[in-house]
Every structure is written in C-alpha cells, then in structure tokens.
Image (cartoon, rainbow, N blue to C red; front, side, top):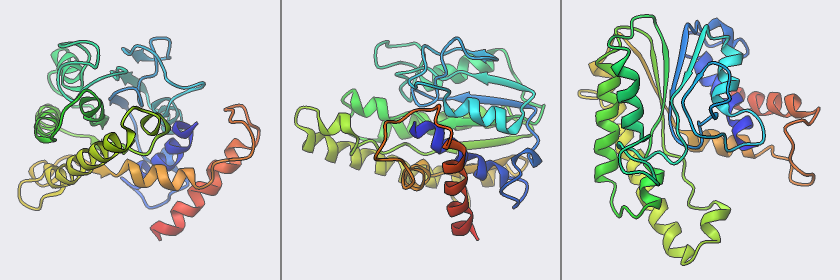
Length: 262
C-alpha cells in the first residue's frame, strides 16, 4: 500500500525534471524506463514488459509499474530482485542478483545508452545492514561504483537515484529480537549512507551531477516522500488497492506536496 502512495509523489519529482507543471507528468518524455533495486522495486517475473525479478512484495502493482504507466514509457525494463544487496550478492546468494550484478547484467547487453533513457537506481544497502554489516564503508563504495558504471555508459538521458529507505522503525524491526539495538544500528548506518550518497551525487566539484553535465541527474530522498505519503494513510479501515477513493487520496497527497514545493 505504501508503494502505491510513494509512486504518486515520486512522479511529481519526475515531472519537475523538465517542467514545473506538477500535474502533467507526460510532459516528461520517457522512451525507456530502466529500474534497478531490491524488494521495494521487484515487480515479479509476471509483470508486463521486461522483468527479471523474483516476486512482487505487494498485493497490487509496485511503484515502477505505476511510474511506467503514468509517464507512458515506450519500453519498460526492471532488473530489481528481492533481497538484493548493494554489491553482487543477495541476502540468500553470494554472487547473484545484487544491485551491482543487475547493473553488470544490463550493461553486458547495452554498452551505450544513447536513446535518452530514464534510469532509476534504488540504491542497495539496507539488506547489507540486515545481513550484519556494522559500518557503511563497503555499501557506500558499492553505490559509488554502481553510479559510475551507469554514467559511463550514458551519453544522454536522466538518472534518478533514490536514497536508502530508513526501516529502523518498521514493525518488523520493532518486533525483532534485541529490537532497540537493531533499530539504533540500522538508523545510524542508513543515515550515514544517505549522508555520503548526498556527497557522491551533489558535491560541487566531484559529484555525479558535476562530472556528467550532459545527463539530468537527480537524487531523491525517499524518506521525505514516504513520510509525506503516509500522512494521508487510512488508519481506520482495512487497506486495499481496490478502494474506489484511492485516486482521491493520491491527489490530496500530491496537492500537499505541490504546496510545499511552491
């Protein structure tokens, strides 16, 4: 359910890449949408288009599918795998389906991206920290290498980079053994990773945006988006993606976000 809310706010960010008219996302030309990520982005192998994941962790569509439909992209490619770490491996596998592995698989068949694509990188790292990593150094290095690999193959287009979602206060973490210790560790590591990610992308001298002036590079703090989206969540009735009032709720959230932007 949260995925559905996030996507509508997320689409407003995409709309601002070329225009400030927030209610007209189709003003952004989308020839090809390419997504990399973990369980938040995995649409399952049954999705329409070109999908490479394991399964969708949602009772409906996941956010990349909604973005694809809203922007009316000519082609949709999703390499996200549930459980993906920031490097080559997965929570369950050592050398398969991680974010870097996804990038390598895609680039092995796409040496140069010259068709003005929209590439969305949901950065890995949260799974690494769940797996026991106690510092952010390796995750940050993996993210930086991943971004470099992508930009070196893009001669045009848009690269949208999503920060790590802070799950330290999620129900699953709160219910875990030694939850307070886990919450503190996850919160610290995710915050530190996002702080360094901001530097990697937006540094005035050596950041991704400065080093790739021919690309439209955007960094989105997904935590801000998620918090804004959840403010309008229905807390009195069971969740369902078939609710007839769902679109109304989305518009209300988007309206609040537009007010913040202006």
